Image 1 (cartoon, rainbow, N blue to C red):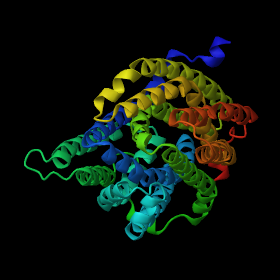
Image 2 (cartoon, rainbow, N blue to C red; image 1 turned 90 degrees about the vertical axis):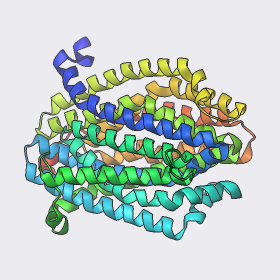
Image 3 (tube, rainbow, N blue to C red; image 1 turned 90 degrees about the horizontal axis):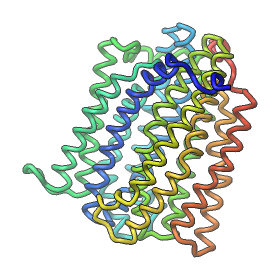
Length: 453
């Protein structure tokens, strides 16, 4: 029984080799996001709320790219397992074209409708004006981010992880230093407030993109930046990828818009306390660092086995990775529950907001085991190309449960923000039951490297 759920030393060594560099990169990124959050929060409640609202659109961009890169990653991981390098490059070319197209679309949309976009979430004039100020520069980050994100996820799909850690370190250090200079006017720079934060992020994204392009142009890390290949893509392969990409990307769009709708419900419930959501999201990202590494381990260790037609080994890896995720999440959740009272002291916000931050962080800490299982099942299903199940348990469930419940309760009741947050987060228990059902059906246990060839 133990052998069924617990791996050998070699198994955990393989997981660590994949996961640790990614966790290191995400730790640096998330820790710097926390510093950014603290810096903006020191300007005041309005600044923190405005940036939180404006960044809802970056989260949508990020989700679309995640869907596109996720679909490409399914094929890349399995083609890599089948030792078909040229197919991996072709998938990368297709992925880059679609990612750039999505980023350009959102950038143009923010050019044309910035104020309208912000007013979808808040009607408070001072928050709208500050959010538009931030978005004035922030929208230019979408295109360089799309290039960097595509490179990062593509390299990750074949187990190349250390380069992302190095690039991420340079980018976040650049962002932090420029935030210090441009938000507060230090070292002779002008004091620009939240506009300074947006400019710092833009410069950091450009630095990150430049490094990735140089890496790919040197052609030393499996993939290359192939402009000719991007202009002359494999149409047969494109059809297979689009077949997977459409539901995955639609899932991510629906999921991110659904999250935005829930955020709007929190604003409707109590706009004054909604600044706490930004803090809790950042802390949650720190808690979820391990899941970023584990999700990559799931995608690679299961995708490669499926691509090599080792289906029983893929099943075995899935069980052991799920068990490992639960052990890791229990440890992380316990630590975060204990340190929750100290987190608000980093921010220059009012006492009610600090009390709300503590409560919301502890809700996240208690629920983290549920999140861990659901996330791992999501990536297991995705590794086998079971995109219908991933969509049903992810975006569809979010709208049927989270969006519907939060909208009704925030509109027709006078629940506190903490109570509404607890109810919405607890819905993941129902999602857990759905995840177990799809995992046991095993529609994900198939080799699409043969089907998609």
